[in-house]
Length: 112
Length: 115
Image (cartoon, rainbow over all chains, first blue to last red; front, side, top):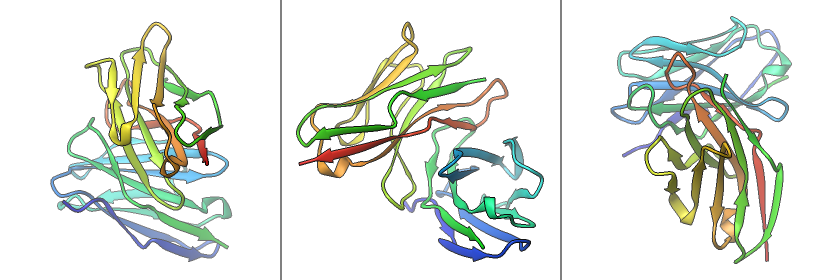
């Protein structure tokens, strides 16, 4: 069975731009969660989507948003990029919520 | 709020010797606990999970962890380290009173394996 896939794997943007990251969960999984990993703050929960509804939200500004489609694929959007948004963004999927999560390889975002 | 504390930021062992990575948790109810591993420039791989069944949990690649409620600990062990075990390890607790899949991560332990 294919794992969680994330596209693109690498992105370079400049301050003020916006970016959209995509996550395709494992087949049959209905929950997708997003996490940000930085050297200073470690791994932090952004939000979770389950059956197209946001179930949980972390402590991030409104510039960070997401959505989930009927096929369970999810996108994450960051508007008005700041230098501090440079990070590895990880997506995880699970069959249910709560349930064991499996992570994708991540998207490395660099903001210049 | 739930939290986990990884007691060592770096651990160094020789190949073939035991590995011990320490984790304490804080939770107002019976937690779901996990260990994940991250190799350089990779995503996170699930090693093992505790979800209130057996207190001794066996995972992949010879790793195991024991849930000790009296000590609020969930330490990760392996009898014999291999060079391929060199990576960063995260102790993780799931959820809050609202349920769902929110994971709270420890700060990570970097494991170095020397010849």
